[in-house]
Length: 110
Image 1 (cartoon, rainbow, N blue to C red):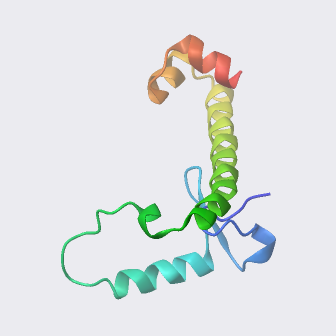
Image 2 (cartoon, one colour):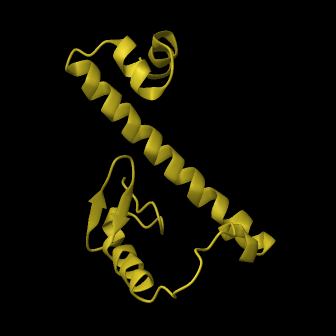
Image 3 (cartoon, one colour):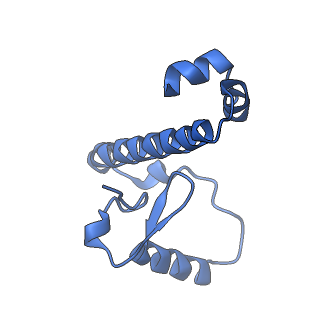
């Protein structure tokens, strides 16, 4: 089942889930993002990694969410590669697009 790549809620738990290239975003995360952009303070851009303000327990609790998103992205990439193959594209072209050799692309996705 597809999940929001930001909050990890399933498609059944949100009103709308918008698909991107390997990622999804729900209507609530879109609204939150819009609010953040609107209220962005003037000044230098944030350069601190997001985990700087996160305690150890919160960091560990977040790891499974990141892993679930990784699996979602991997599944989507497999779908895109499958469509490329269905269209008759060679493993050479697919590997080149992914920055790997033909053999590596074939081993990963065949």
